[in-house]
Image (cartoon, rainbow, N blue to C red; front, side, top):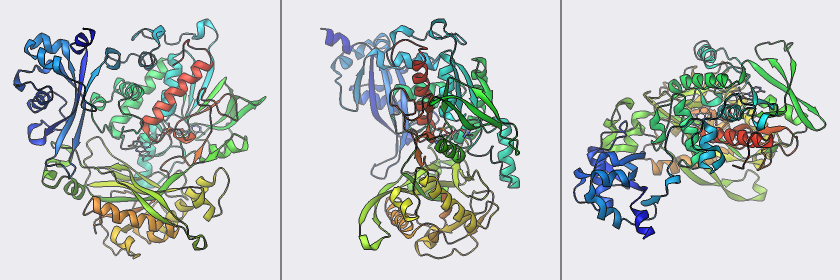
Length: 623
Ligand code: FAD
């Protein structure tokens, strides 16, 4: 009887509900359309779709699927059915719900605690709630600026780095009542915007305030893709997304299958995030770089900082802290060197290098959507601007023929920016590296993506690079070569895809490029060692099979993409998040090798905040 009652309570989650494009209001609508009711009625075997009350359903996720294997492109929904509301408004549905059975991946009965609903009041309480910490009480607001830990004095925590991982670590720690100082070498978004403007318009690179450094970290002038491989429906990812919504992100990011924000949405969001942190007592120091750690008795007791705008570095001062959360991202090469000099354990990590390929967006739309391509209309149409994601394994021909070894190397598209632009992510004028960004509409006429192959210690060895920072030296080598090939002044070396395949310099006029600082035809096929170039060529040919038309005279390769993920890991305890080699140091986020993207960095920052709070007895009960 309990089982029967259970079926008629709570929520049924219905997944993979397909609605053809013609029957759907389009990508911007997250409501319950007639077409969606038809799909729902089919799953619950209810005969008259129009009799199902819209109020009983809520859209949990909406994606667009235009794969070629489908007969027609469709929107694919996951929908929650609230049984109580359904039966109140349409009692005739009773028998249909009664007969409904769970089906793997299609129909699932959710126990009440599995449904994440309600507004997020604090990220701490949201995480406590979904992690089952009953002591916190549901949605009970935490006391901001409380002493935490039952009246003991507040621990002073430095969070170094204002990217997603640092911001979320600071947020959690502030909500737990720690005395938090957020130290960021770059500038707040308003000033950073002006510095980026000077770079794009006048070619002036501020080495401390640029596409990598400044408020919001590397993710601010980005595409703002919020997709992650760490489980998009997990409670912690939802807690991050809800926090972003609370600071001004559109709430469709909670539902979209491929959520993204775009730079224009990220900037006001970060401003709101900052104001909240300040109101929670966080002391934010922009334009302040951590140059050294203060260590006493094998423990971090503070940091040495200097004004990052002071070129003479005469402004250095020491600040004392009980703990230092290090969230510096993967471009802080000087910080890695400082850590090494302090004997902090660093281990090299595999990452990926390659080139960024750019096509006209219309070409990608027509490859992906065929007849539907006209529906895109520069991001204002019914279907989303087309993207792609390709992964292949290619034969790795080892350079050292005497070993005649051959293994597989993975090769993939990365950080694809539909309707976006190629941007300069160098932090030093002698080095040249690029990435992609977009605005929320994704309405530019170009589509760009990195095309990269994995590299590891074996590749670093070939250039006689060894030691913990070998990967960084490897990146630097190709960034310098790219700068030289471009001829300096941040001009990017480019080559048409067919010419790259045939080792030919591209003739002018070149296809247009979204890169604003200028491009120059160059022999990109000579930039990387032959085995990496060979892997890139093999993968291009394989991508062509998946996306016919990808190899095109209009497709332009840009050099060089080197900072795909951190080349270094800073080992830490899984439980306490503390560095295994230095007490009081908490390495987090992408730069520490524990994240690869905005959301995963934010999640890592959030968990590190919990771990630090726990280590300082700021809350009772494990998470
Ligand atoms: P970061 O965001 O790198 O933040 C580190 C911060 O630390 C920086 O602000 C830096 O100034 C500061 N810092 C460094 N050293 C010091 C020091 N010594 N003292 C004080 N402060 C210091 N990811 C996605 O998921 N989706 C995307 O669409 C996407 N697009 C991207 C586009 C571009 C152009 C770039 C560059 C990256 C993109 N990424 C994207 C990757 C994403 O931005 C990163 O994975 C993410 O920002 C990592 O977060 P983090 O907090 O670990 O480090």
